[in-house]
Image 1: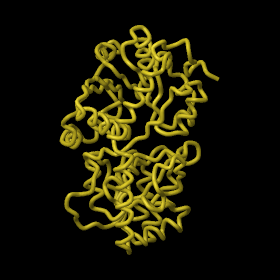
Image 2 (image 1 turned 60 degrees about the vertical axis):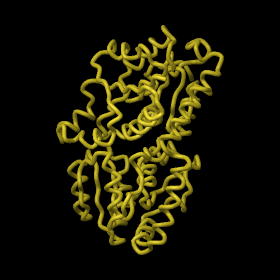
Image 3 (image 1 turned 45 degrees about the horizontal axis):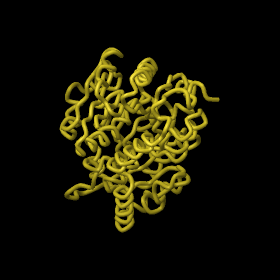
Image 4 (image 1 turned 135 degrees about the vertical axis):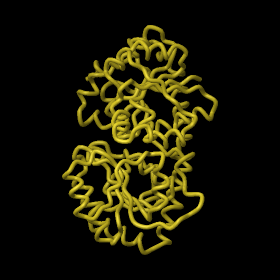
Length: 380
């Protein structure tokens, strides 16, 4: 099979979390003997920001850890269309421009020689639904949604049984416990400040509890405005700046624990969708404590795979317990690893994608394209 994925960027993970999962799942298909091509537009802002801040050196970690992967850049829609000439499966990520999304849908309808899926890994379907509904998805065979609550949004828009839940997962070829343990100390959080979507939560579930529990805190990320940096300084946080995601395992390996602080939309409107850092942290064998978050799909075993905190005081107690109790840390590590290895690796997601293709192939109307079911723009 030839798989073509149209992404914002494969090379850059600067404020582009989809690159984490995409690298892992594409590499899995490569190792299974499939032909894989990633297409990304010229001038992708994530890559431009990375190069502006770090130059070509900012790409070294990606290139070193993912030698199997490469991407092809395109500057026109026609170039992108030409690259699909012999594709069997094409996946379009929702960060792409509406004009490209529509054009590839038209190509699919005209030629009907590949399966075409739309991949949504963001909260815009509920935070800015008109931005998603402006996409012309007529001609798409189905939607991959990274959580059940997001899938329900698409079903309400008329996609029925052509929307499939496809959670993110850990690339366990890279994200795994260190081969040789080293001394660990303090707390680490890897994430972006992000448009005020969790600013208060970062204070109440990360910075203040870390300070109260006596754990030094390192924070890695981008898009921290001056007021955010001032807040970090007030709590004595060591701000480390951008971290290539390929280096995250070595950073986790140096620290005692980490914290999950979801954005508000994933708590209030799209429960059941964790950040990819939960998968990656558990895969690396680092104890994790989560701010309030409802695991409505039963992805994990809260209280066993990670600890949960209902409020700031409970977060502080959990962090203090982790600092003092090696047995608690070890129990969390073993349980979290067990769950990742059983259910949440990129190999599992590759299997799930192949199962989606089998289901679509079995559907009698799959190749008809436009008459049998309403497109997103046409459903109520």
